[in-house]
Image 1 (cartoon, helix red, strand yellow):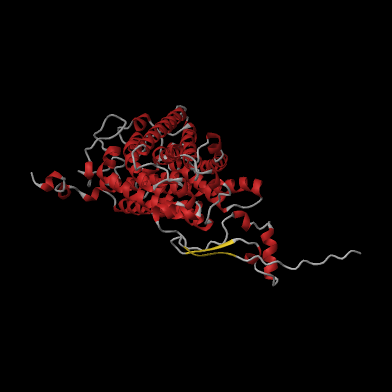
Image 2 (spheres, rainbow, N blue to C red):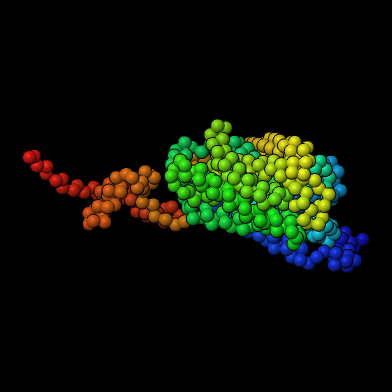
Length: 499
């Protein structure tokens, strides 16, 4: 047997390439590239949401997990998730190990595109999932154990979840679960796994939780809209062709986050009397998460309802981490897990056969309650319970097992947490800066510093000379160049005159 025969390359000469529409193929290539662009979007979002001293570590973790995921997917991830010859309903086999025989046959997900393109597109879904999951290490998780965890988590958690929902022999697929673009594998997988990882990792120090706020809200906004752009390829491309169902999914992916962002922002306004940029971005992402499993199943009017519900429910769900006493720093559970659950349950109510059939392929798939398919809701609910339970337990076991290996403890030291992961893990920084004051209260616009600032503008002494704070000038490597006490200069006090 020749080497080429072993890897199936001669079959390319016999295959009729005209069986695939070049427009469909081109559309999915572009959609896959758009999904890939979500990786830097996640990195910027997480970096902006964190403290400055750990901002670059999250960018590194998201970027490096992308590389680990690509390797795992090429090695055996695609085969474990989508090999059509596996019949156990839980996980695939190694028939397509190393992309063996993955070339130009119709894909297991859709006859509209070839298997090789489908494997690339699904790989980008997996990369986004582990990128989201990396938010669980925020500000206290070591990056090397997180990369090892990523490889095993992809193999033992993500691949089974993808098999359940999308493999033609998966138990969820056979049972009739409606999961368009990944409410289970992507959203519940990343959100619940992030919660489990944070639980094993442990809480940050109490002093690190005081006055916590995003260090760069502009980067949060940039990351959000990069994600929104990529999500159009994520949801639109899940129709696997340039057809009306893809356009409907894109429309739903615009409508839902618009309403979700507004609702979240208004809920925050009732408390703070401020229009929060972080709140608007959070609501938009929560609704995009809900649109992931539902955008290719429901009418636009249902997306309006879904966006409102997702924005409200996920907003209130950010309080659950305090009840559970789990330091879910970036609210992965509230946004991704619950958002995915909302989308999956909405399919039970509002999925419509008329929308599903727009791709010209899934013409015999029933919808939900709007099509009088009453059993669909409990199918969706059972699927949610199965994915949540399996993901949390399996993730916690994997994380704890890695944490017990000498040298692979998941959490950094208390000193490392105080110094910041950028210094102890990366050795580089997202921003070069001169630190003037350490405490947030020193910058309060409603404290004494406001008076000092006004006095300075009116010709008085600079506030650095009056308050006795230590002035620290730092180079990009956090090496102190100069540290000195500013002199306290007493101002003459006016002599009161009694009348």
